Amino acid sequence: MEDIFKSWLVEIPIAHRGLHDKNTPENSLAAFSKAIEKGFAIELDVQLLSDDTVVVFHDNSLSRMTGNDGYIKFLNKSDLKVLKLKGTKEHIPTFEEVLKLVDGKTPLLIEIKNSSTKVGKLEQKVIDLLKNYNGEYAVQSFNPFSLQYFKNHAPNILRGQLSGSYKGEDFNGIPFYQKFFLKRMALNKTISHPNFINYEANALPNRYVKKYKQIPLLAWVVASKEEYLKVVKHCDNIVFEDFIPEI
Image: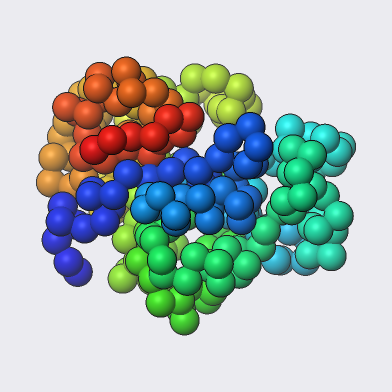
């Protein structure tokens, strides 16, 4: 495996859910096209539909991005183009569509959206879709067991442990004891064995990441030049949105 400190993962700023704005929805083909045009790597989220199609979508609920009730996991592939993102012409893309669009033009940082200890179905489908993809990529997840699956079944794929303060509504419903272990990345050495860490920018620096100097540290999500200037001394690269980094 190449020296990860000399790879794209450190050298190219990563656009969070693509290069999106008020007219270009996150995790859309348009947002990914803009990131490619500007020369940024792309961070995106993948999860499964009820028919096992892998799609690129962040939320569990459809409401924020489509204005519709319901949950992404209950959809089928045939439903995707009917639902428009933020009132635009953009639809929820399949992972296969995104791979075809990007086609190696810029690296991909793929977040595996699986909060269960029952892993394997989504992870294996991602592995299968990437087998014939001719481009650079890495996977990441908050779930150490998801990363363990990649370690055991596709050890050549770079994998990153996502973590942070575990504060905010995105982490509601996670028991306190799980947050305690996850924000400390207590399972890194026994379960996930990450090649890099992606930690919440607002929670850096901290003692939990300082002991991992041998692997790169990314910071999510940096949303302004001011935030970038604060965090850059503590990390090797950023996942950004709402501004264009000049690095």
